[in-house]
Amino acid sequence: MNASVTERLSDFQWPTEGVTRVPYRVFLDRDIYELEQERLYRGQTWNFVGLEIELAQPGDFKTNFVGDTPIVVTRDKEGNLRSFVNRCAHRGSMVCLENSGNRLSFSCPYHLWSYDSTGALRGVPFQHGISGKGGMEEGFRMSEHSLQTLNVTTYNGLVFVSFQQDMPSIETYLGQRMRENIDRVFNRPIQLLGYNHQYLQNNWKLYFENVKDSYHASLLHLFFATFGLNRLSQKGGIEVDETGGHHISFTKMNTDEGREGEYQKSNLRSYQSKFTLEDESLLAGRPEFDDGVTLAIQTIFPNLVVQQIYNTLAVRQIVPKGPSETELIWTYFGYADDDDTMRNIRVKQSNLIGPAGLISMEDGAIGEIVQKGVIRDEDQSSFVEMGGTGVESQEHRVTETSIRGFWQQYRAFMNF
Image (cartoon, rainbow, N blue to C red; front, side, top):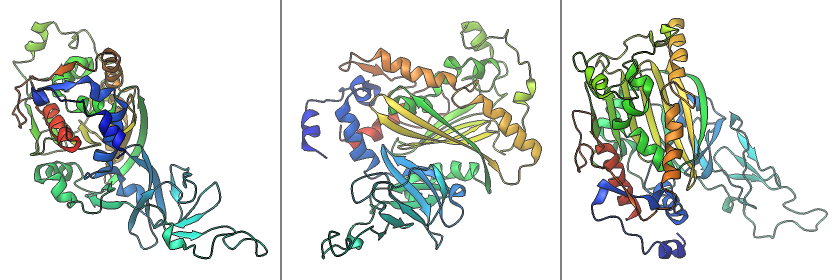
């Protein structure tokens, strides 16, 4: 890391109250953003980059990002997953410009240096010059100019990469409770249903806070509260892992009988009994998990969201694009043994989420609203004390414990 970045941040002090206060500067400062790229995304973290089903055959590849660094993930001819930085060793051009495809070699568009699916340099045009003139010096060795490779691992169909080679196993990184929920959702072979890409005009951490924030869900989202998919009066809870960085929030529908009036009595904007659905089949689904959980949102630090909202299943990847810009990649899936009816249910319910979803469209706006609100007050802080001041699992969702957990893990990595 450039010493000037850390020097410019030498005056930065986290509020003495700890994780119950979040300085707005972390959403605004270019130097903090640069430090995140080094300490989080290129540090001791496993970064989610895709699903194994997207890379099923030798030669399958997809481009993606770790932080804002472009990468390629591919399956080589022996069937092994590989990943490398999408940057030619010659002059720095991106090597692969396609989103996905199938090939066992990659050729830089600039000067046509070519690499195999392991990232090894295999060809340099005019390496020996023309008619004995020009070309590379005698000591040039292609083996010294391969693409920068990344550490690759998988867990139950999820693909993770890291810039660090001395990472703990993915099982250790996730921990037992986080693995249990992934195993619950990825309990059998899956089938891809589609993608959405969403560009947000706000810092990536504002979105990560949002998906960890169970307090807002039935207040910001009219659809959630009005149609009973998610109310704080329903049974549910928050589970935070020992680091604070990973979490699960869960809800069980139709468990707030006798308590639904809390929303009516409060006269909340988010509860509007006058609204009905023109097509009620939108919410006509099937119970499919034995635990009765109908909504579960899981986050894995620093960039993954695993989602079950009724019968919609998806993973979301958070990609920082600068201090005030974020890309959100949604990947929707079902199970390979779904019948046609179940597949149609999942596709129809996908209208609940995504960039224009009946539930989550507000999430695409609220981060920008916060970003605009804090723009000139980086010395001020947010107040995060709903449900207490600690970082622990709780048997309810009227809490911000998982947000505090995120900032606990964030501060540990950033040394703030």
